[in-house]
Image 1 (tube, rainbow, N blue to C red):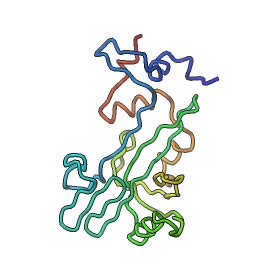
Image 2: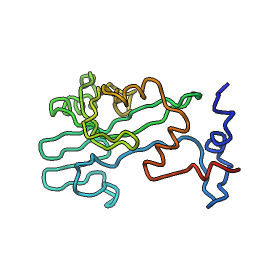
Image 3: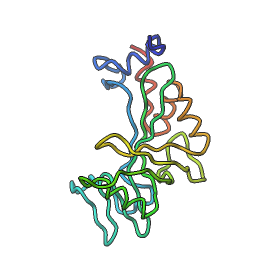
Image 4: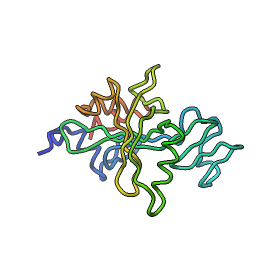
Length: 189
């Protein structure tokens, strides 16, 4: 049995038929937090023009890859288990990698290309709830076929969080830190 099933707020979050009394908002499970571009990207979001690639001179941003000056970035996923459940919350940050690793990843996407072996990187977005002046080091490992690489955090406190998971209240705090405080919506049925 999922221990969080005892929490009415958890049941409301996962009930697609639940409607918030505040504004009619409904949910159907965990809300993952993604980023449109690395924080250093100065040219606006990809989605504004509807194009698959946003180009500004030599700089390029696609949904999965980014080149900004001499820097290279891969879009990744960062899983964090939710304690008391079988669910996993995902950040979808950008990770700065060495140019050789960036091109090795691209080569792995071609049919018959070499497998992506993974690489070291630095999280390139400020993660709500885990803001730090120091860069967050990670190891990228291959995701499943057709999936983004998975970031395994190397520095605490996020590394410990990724291992131990977060409580449901911590997750709600994280959503609030990201600008979407859903706690009032889930408080009353």
